Structures are given as C-alpha cells and as structure tokens.
Length: 439
Image (cartoon, rainbow, N blue to C red; front, side, top):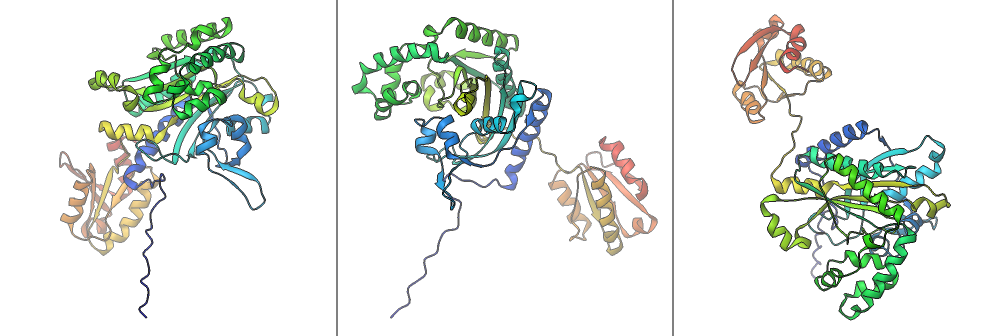
C-alpha cells in the first residue's frame, strides 16, 4: 500500500492581518514622531490600555446593536469563563481607565492620547484590515465647543504634517437625547414609507438603530436618504448654539469643512458633534463628486460622547475625541507616491586591513554614542566594494581607515558630494563629525 503524501500546510498570515516589513517601518515611526510631538504641544498625555478587555465594556458603551458588536468584535470565553474581547476601538477603554483610576477627581479636563493595534472581523479590502493601528485623542470632563474644534484640529494637523494635503472635514451634529428623539420619530415615520425599497440591514435598523440607516452605502438606500428629514432642523437651542460655536472655532483655525447632514458615525455613544476627515484629490474632484461613495476613504473621525460615561457609572461628564486610521493614512501616502523622510545613516565607515577592522569596532561604538547614525561593512576588505555600498545607500560622509591611518591614529573624512577629504586624528573624529552634520 502506497504511503499517503503529506499535505503541505501554507505558512502565512491570517486573512486581514498583515506584517509590517522593514521597508514600511519608517512610515509608522514617522507617524509616531509626528503625533507624539503635536500631542505634547496640545498638552495631551499618553495612555496605554490593554488589548484585551471585558466584552461588556463594548456591548454597553459602543452599543449592542452596532455592527462592531454584532458582526466585527473578536470575543470569546476564557478558561475562567470570563467573556472578553480584543479591543475593536479605543474610546471605551480610555473611559474605563478614567473611571477606574479616579481621574474624575483630577483637575479637569483630562487630555489623553493612545496608539496601538485594534481588531475587527471585517471583510479585508483596501484600507481595511482585521488588525489595524489607530491613533486616538480624547478630552474628558469639558463641554466647551472649543474642545470639539481642538480635537478636530489636532487630527487634521497630524495628517497634514505627515504629508497629505487637500484635507476636508465633514461635520454634523446629532443633537442631545432631548432633540434627537424628535428627529428619530420623524425619520422612522419617513423611512417606513419606503421600507419595501430599503436593504435588509436598513429594514432591521429602522427598529434597532434608525440613525444607522443614514450611514448606509447601498444605492437604493442613498436615494431614499437624500430626501429624509435632517437632524439639523430638529436641534434644540442649546445644541444649535454648541454646533454654531464649533463651526466658528473651525473658521478661526482655518480648518476647511463641509456640512454633511447624513453623517452619523457607527457608534451609539455619539451626541452633538460628529466628524470625519477625508483627503480630496483636486485633480479628480469632479470624478470623485460623481462617484463619491466608492472613492472616498475616511482617514479620521470622531465626535462628542457626553453620554458614554453615564452608561458605566451614571455620572454626567462631557467628553470629546477622535481617531486616525494609521494604515489608511499610510496607504493614501503610497497611493500619492509620497515617501516620508527617513533618518538615513549619515556616515559610512570604510576599513582596510586587520588592525583597521579592530579599531573600527571602537569607532562605530563612539560615533553611535554621539547620536550619529553610522553604517559599515566589516565583512568586506575591498575599498571599491565598500565605497560602492556607501554610494548605493546614498550616505554623504565616508570615513576611510587604512593600515597606515590606523598606525598613525588618524582617519580620513570624505565628503561624497564634493569629494573633499580631510585627515584628522581619531580622537578628534566625533568633534569634526558634529561640525559637518551639526548634530
């Protein structure tokens, strides 16, 4: 009897998960540098919450009827029978930490930012992954409309600073419970007239979450929604004034925005201000307008969540925040052909001979200790090969250490652009390099 052939099991990442390869790492590092610098200027403090949280945190906060909880959340029972979830978003964990650690008694508002991996079981496609990285910023304990504008400005400026221009903010107000309940009544009454023409999801949403119908991307639903009542017409005086001031602050900050009366976001806890930030391709703007839903990709979004804290402990504390989809921003950069500047090596060390190679180890250590990025090929002995590698890496300064130089305690500094060379003492090398590259 012939032996059965063993099947080869493909070793590859899971659908929707992705490796960040070395050539892409600098995109992420560059993003981290920008948001950490800007968050510091805006006086936000970093917080890191666990990747694994109680599933109830999201069921109660994000909303039991949302797509995130019903379809996308990775949840499971632990060996101890705890019902847990990989975090699908960042706001509920930040609110949980705010309450758990008594931040409510600290001087308000509390301004926090976070960065890390999140998980949603979605259909993988361009700009959408099952494991993705997100930057978020939250302001807790402040109701002033200026906070809404500051959060929008922070996210806008991070993306802009990263290299993506032509950004536009789409913004809306969902009002408070007092005024949006009147709107929901009017919306449901309108939608029921066309219920036979709505998609199956929207038919279900009329009962469970009418706001979400406004966010549907199906063509037939979009046509019906275009003539639906608008929340802006149902805002109470307080919500109307709040929204007006948010827009006035955006005008002062010169943040470009457009009103989108159908923008609702997919989370139950939003109230009053909601927004999304898009990149607009000016060259293809007319084409984008004609086929807007298929071409627009949101790079960031957020809003006010005054009612979320009350869900967990009945406190009435205002809050506002937003997040940036990091992979979406990076994919947009690549699509535009923009490659962020990377911290390349500034110096290349060429060594020739055994004694030079040994001295080179100490030189490399000293140069790096001086915070100067240096590269070398200690496995090579040929001068031309090493200079060729320095040229391929486009490194501007080359150090050449031969047997003679090593014996004399000197080293040659060569400017690759001008081909000018200077012989200096090895003991003076760091000082000379700092003059050249101004570290």
